[in-house]
Amino acid sequence: MNNAVAGFSKLSKEEKINWIANEYFSNPTEAITTIKQYWNSDVKLQQLHDEFIENTITNFYLPMGIAPNFLINGKYYSVPMVIEESSVVAAAAKSAKFWSTRGGFKATVLNTEKIGQVHFLFKGDAAKLQAFFNTVKPTLIDSTESITKNMQKRGGGILGLELKDKTAELENYYQLHATFETKDSMGANFINSCLEQLAKTLKEAAQNHSAFSEAEKNITVVMSILSNYVPNCIVRAEVSCEVSALAEKKIENPQEFAEKFVQAVRIAEIEPFRAVTHNKGIMNGIDAVVLATGNDFRAVEAGVHAYASRNGQYSSLSHAQIENGIFTFWMEIPLALGTVGGLTSLHPLVKMALEILGKPSAQELMQLVAVTGLAQNFAALRSLTTTGIQEGHMKMHLNNILNQFEATSEERKTIVKHFEKNTVTHSAVVALIENLRK
Image 1 (tube, one colour):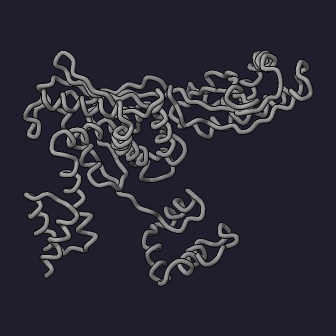
Image 2 (cartoon, helix red, strand yellow):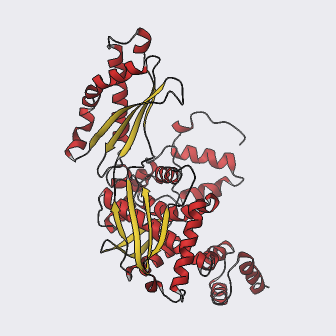
Image 3 (cartoon, one colour):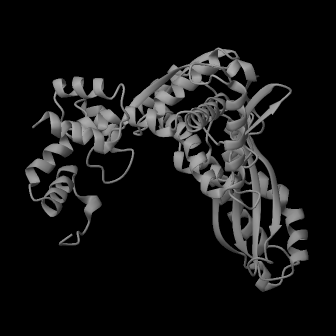
């Protein structure tokens, strides 16, 4: 970068693009063409996208695919997935089809509690603060009435409020720890608005509390914010069948396969280096549906990985067992999702994705997302414990390599035919392309 820029946000879209093109590219005209070729020709639709974030210059496209044949709680779904990684959608679809003939997936929402905290400093007697909180607690909750009124009509609102003494970890540090039910909304704005009101009322009430000294009356609110760690917003997804029913073309010995599969999961339960990659595979499925439905995949990722470490060591999210001849594979994970608010009513493809899923409630979406993650994990472990992960992945990746080298249709036909019987590797594909072009 050659120069700083003043007031970038105040520039028009055209001015922003021109500045970027001239500042960073040797061929500004080509850069501008690339930026603009991803604009939507529908001006109103493009404006909608422009206003999702700040300083927008163009749209960044990711593929949206469909994984059909998911049998969940006795009902079939086609699951929309937004992701750039080769083989993810194919793997989910393959797992869905595999389990659709073996009883399908079962999913259950165990809890839907969400959390928010007011973090504050109090320099004084902890017992006096607790007594003050006990007295003022109804007032704190009542002060949020105007914010919670509509949510309460839908069966949601503040579930609980407690004072937590954290002074052993950090001097003078306390929390108001609030729990919420937000129904079909993810609820971030609702929760944060409630917390800010609680903080304001807390400070005001402290100022008027006669039992406090002058120093104790001056509560310092550091911040009021929801938590993306939701260990009591849990969904369980599982599959099970007789071990003998696992047999298929690539599983000739189902007992051996099941035992090896269970061992692979146990390794991920006790070995963090494996667990991270194991769980990343689960998140391939989860993130793709979270994105497609306009939810916050960063929040989901943060919460899920924190949950995977809840016992003091990072571990597998999924588990497997063989008991009395029955193979069971399951997972319990925290998922705070919404089907109203945010992008769900704004982004046309998000609305379409939710329509494809049958306009689910937040709890139904939790089940769908968890099942897709479990399906993804099953597909990965099945490959790892049978043919190896690279065979299927590299076949899917073949297209990317061919596009990278701008292969002609004739070259594609020859190369695809060649790799029907040969192992796909990047170097092997490049060598074949070079050979064909000699």
